[in-house]
Length: 474
Image 1: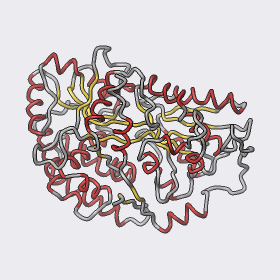
Image 2: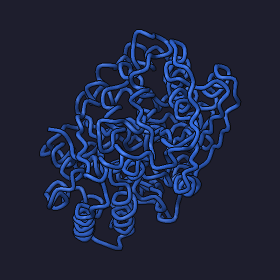
Image 3: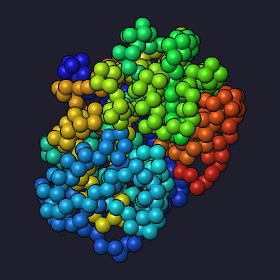
Image 4: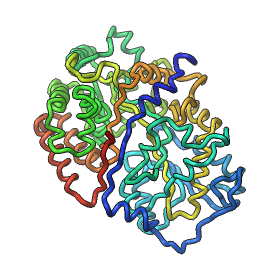
């Protein structure tokens, strides 16, 4: 798989999606003037050197909170072991699925942990934390030498787009998205081959496949009704495929009428038809993402919209001969602005460091360690996912799902979409529009009502001065 998966340039092209954040005045002033906490709080600092470029204080405690989801947290513990050895400490580590509920009170009380994996359904609002000056500017990390080659800076080894993905309101980067995720409709290649099914290219072909799966006693799709925004991994990118990148960008940019264009109407009509034909697994509306994956791996549904973390997250129930594969975005057909083979892919799994933590230098150093060849190799081998380090997976033996992700990514070339509404406006996407999607998939509202509600919610967000605003670059 070595030469086939040597797609460093393809990833760079794919992620070269320029983004310029347009902050409110309050955001700029907050970031410039305040750390959001007690300025008199003791902060651990050490002497900078070639071996310690960030100035970590030897023996200073470091507290770590990691989202224990699809990737688990063992890969972070492995990096912590190197950190502990280097600085003579034992890191205080907490793995949890409730990052937001556990840490919101601590940020409010200015007692946050130093280092966090801010991921999962209940994660913290990164944009809001950045606005409030609660997050450490990671520029020092970007400018630090890499562990493997001190002649290179950390910023030099990151996949194009990674820095932009973590910027919220200024040129500063407040989150390092560690994993590189390929999204799409995932399926068992073994099942498809046994049934003689072909992965569809168009909405009509997908509807036709739904009739075949239904006849075989298998739902076409399942989804996590408790977190319906998972469906947006396909839905939003399909809007971009049908209407072009600029249509998806308009949604991200909260433009007037962005949800009322023909591309949105075509995609939503497709989902309305899926619901009307009952091609979603009954009971999906009450499922979590884990329950959704379990139903799918047990053969109750043919497809799920998910990210490439699914290979590791669903591993406990996935048969060894499942032969996991991912399909590109389906669309309306020849009229689409982007070809079949277009995919949604982006850097993800955002790591943040608290500006008012006790050891921000230690938090950045742990990230520097995680970006080393030793730790990126461990991550890819252990959790079946790529990292944000360019070429880090070259030469590694990859699992079926990761191999499939690499194949579709290479085939996509520059036809890669990245919907930013999901991280720029978390509440809008996950809750407000997510609730509309949940109602659409159960047939409780029409596509027209979804579009009306989504546009109304977008307009309300645009008018809300308390929400920092962002825009795609030219």
